[in-house]
Length: 207
Image 1 (tube, one colour):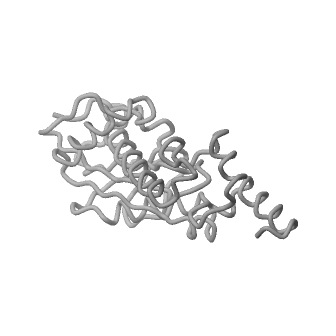
Image 2 (image 1 turned 90 degrees about the vertical axis):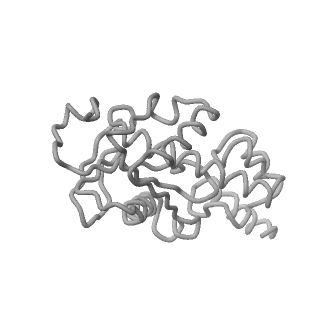
């Protein structure tokens, strides 16, 4: 049985991996990417854009994806790599690492968004692909759950930033904790709010 979502694209005979990322917007923590090759013989119901699912539903689906997919891989780029490369290039690198980490070699990578990483296989960018292509939906779920788990670990290391609540995104709570406690080693120093805080700290001799 072929994925009904793929009838739009006519990719008969291809071994397709879906690719998506999580964590471009946060001020802290790595950016994650995942690649998934679904097994047509073992369909998973309920796959959709991870942002439209509850955390509990994402976790359940992530377990099913890992158990039933032909292959899956999760990769990341660290805060240091993000600051060195910029977030776009770091995201592309995380995506490439995820695809290269697959145990099964795909013939085509379908990437969520409007641009593709440099890969050794053919790739195609699909805007809003995480709601159009089940393999991309699966990748979005794996990337999101992996990143959320990583931020829970960072919360254990730096509890005063409340990473377990905002997952590094620039919420009012996060900004308040940043101003109160300063910049941690896991904050992205190239991001404007963090950069501004570092500049203020340097100017006032608090760095």
